[in-house]
Amino acid sequence: MKRELGEYNLAVVLNDNAKRVTPQVRARIHELVPERSIFYSRSLDDSSAIARKVVDARYDAVFTGGGDGTVIQFINDMVATHAPLPALGVLPLGTGNALASMVSSGDYLHDLETYVLQKQADFQHIGLLQSEGRVFPFAGLGIDARILNDYVHIKKRYAENRVMKPLLQGLGGYLLASFGRTIPQVVGDAMAGRRTSVRVVNRGRLAFRADVEGSPVEEFGPGQVIYQGEAHMVSAATAPYYGHGMKIFPNSLRHPGYFELRIVFGSIARAVAKLGTVWKGRFVEDGFWSVMAEDVSVEFDRDMPFQIGGDAHGLRKNVQFTLSPTRLRLLRFI
Image (cartoon, rainbow, N blue to C red):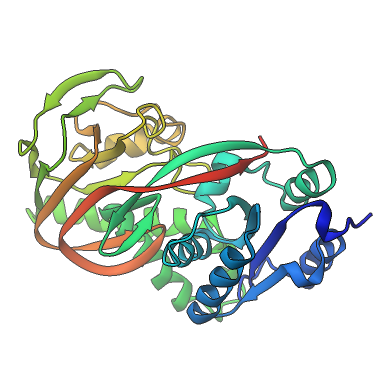
């Protein structure tokens, strides 16, 4: 039974280009939410205009339907209005769904029905990172962004292949890109002596390296070098997941006022051999550091692939990650 709009103050924003936003999905959502409170985004301009409408209407909550890129773009568009942010619901209707992994049951209809029909929801409060004028829950330079680029490359290459195309959807595509292209290239680079170095400097208050339980094992004062040497990846996050339930940042929620920095300079083969442990967020050891910080500069000795929120953002040698003053109230259904 559809309620009247006055009984709750809710908007739903759907990525009209997302493959999982099917006619069936649209129909089910329209059964729950009045049409005037459902918005379809087809472009960056659409997202910006919808964000302005949402904040001007002072909705209590807005649900976004799409992948991480859709959610993060919409967050940035709302932040750009400088208005108070509504609570955010994340419907897992895209690729990755890192934020959805934290708060969604995995069933978009269940989550929406729980809020609309029962008005039940808990909240997960999380901070955000900022860099280059954008806010986001996770980003990285190195092998993680390289996997993303290889995934895009493989999808384009086999876009018309009826056999391969279904295998490349979602997690299967990322695994194929990782083991079929990225990791062999990384191993090949190492064997050929093509190595990459990085310098990571603490630009904020006292930072510290943590163990798998989040307890400090080494401290770094303001201006101190956190790490300098060869590295495969430097990534940062305020949320535990990288998408598909992969818990790369186990300490990200344990220390309010900090984000988690992962510096990977150990053996990739060792990480692959312990993939199950990596997936569950239990892989923090020598060569796979977890550092809690509020502001760091990252400088590689050559251009590296860069990703923000699971979307490719070209190449970078230098990046600064800073904890943003913006915080999110995520509607939680698990």
